[in-house]
Length: 251
Image (tube, rainbow, N blue to C red):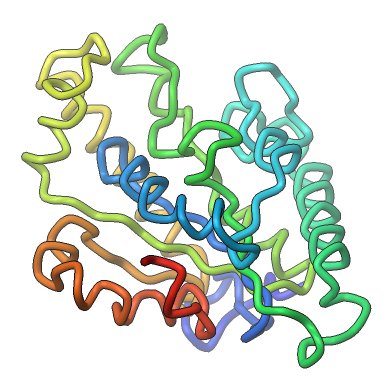
């Protein structure tokens, strides 16, 4: 299943054993305010004007619906009632998507290149750390409203698909401004800072529990400013997400 020790991590780290240059599942992980909606906007042309970027609304909504108590399907911490059932469910969904897109039936070489967007699409929430929970105690259960990358990685290995995690990072002051000034979540700077600090530790712990080859960090705002629009299509991060990214997808 790829859930054993990894040469790119210590004992107990989820090993990455499945790679594909044709079909990849992409998940954007990051703290609240780290740029999930910017990623959504950046990838919209790929979703709407071509078949390269693919989303399956039923899959995205099932792994996101933590607040409705769909515990055996949710990727969120509040749904942790049966990890084995949840992992198997997500793995079966990933396998079904791979078959639907042809890779499971015809093999890598004959399949059209596709990138499946697990989040940052228009099917559900952004799945940030945290995501929602606005009516909970700011110092309590709100920090539990986060996805579980470790289980997502285990499910991907069980399904024998290539998962890539883009870790979206941002300067701390900009994170706080995004979530306390630009968007009003009903929290003070101090309380939101505490939530983000706890969430950062949770995200860091999950990343430490999966093979380093699963993920890559990026500051979308800094990189986009540094590269400029003319060179954004040649961004090296695209190759991590998918090596056959069409040059015209971002025009």
